Image 1 (tube, helix red, strand yellow):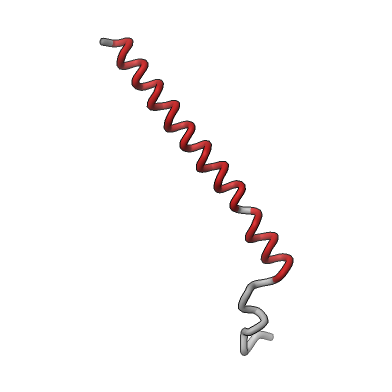
Image 2 (cartoon, rainbow, N blue to C red):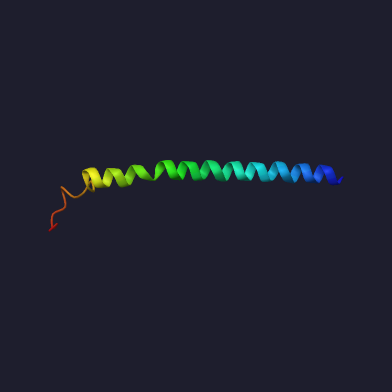
Length: 53
């Protein structure tokens, strides 16, 4: 009984770690795009903003 519980827990932990790593990777790869786009072109509504300084 105990080895089965250990195997199930280790497989579950491995799946959770893989999911967390994939989520972190997608967050990290998605993050640089908006900042580079903002610094290059500015915000999309800046050109049509009526009362901008």
